[in-house]
Amino acid sequence: MSLNHIHLYEGDLPGSLSFGPSVAIDTETMGLNPKRDKLCLVQLSAGDGQCHMVKFDIEKPYEAPNLKKLLSNPKILKIFHFARFDLGILYHTFGIMPMPVYCTKVASKFGRTYAPKHGLKELCTSLLNQKLDKEQQSSDWSAPTLSKEQLAYAAHDVLYLHALKEILDQALIRTGREGLAQVCFNFLPTVAALDLQGWEVGNLFAHD
Image (cartoon, rainbow, N blue to C red):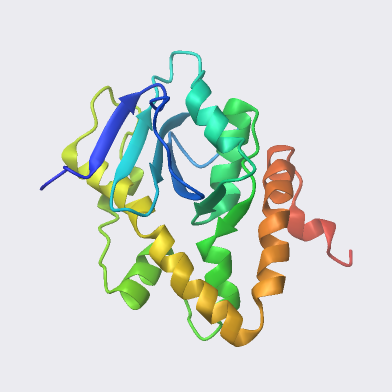
């Protein structure tokens, strides 16, 4: 298994690293509760086939000034798949809500209403003919040393997001839903903040 496209850093990104106008971002954590489970890894890609990863020691303070500068830059579009979770864990960890945001899961739900599933694995298979191995999804991301399988899995979660965005943007245009999708992208940081405060977003808009 070749890992030549993966660049792993401890605690922060290099100050000289640039991702251009948009960056794909994903996170790996100790669990699925952003208030309880700590951040272990942040993966980033400029869509150029290279993946940059920041590994964190969960027993040390989360400082990462270069990563925080990137997350807070309003001129850089942050592309996620299921942004709701990643925004929550990043905000809870660093006190920064990344914006502006694009979510391939939301885009797929608007642009591909014919499709029964909108997970990253399904999108990569059906739109890019790329098969993702999700076996490492529930592995221990806090381990002092990550395995080759973990690194490969983590990289795949960002390497295809730019390509997916390009295809999904066309689907949104064809269906005339690009404006509606953008409104939802803009609302995602608020949804993540409400999640952290314990509000059930669906209930806020319910009749009862």
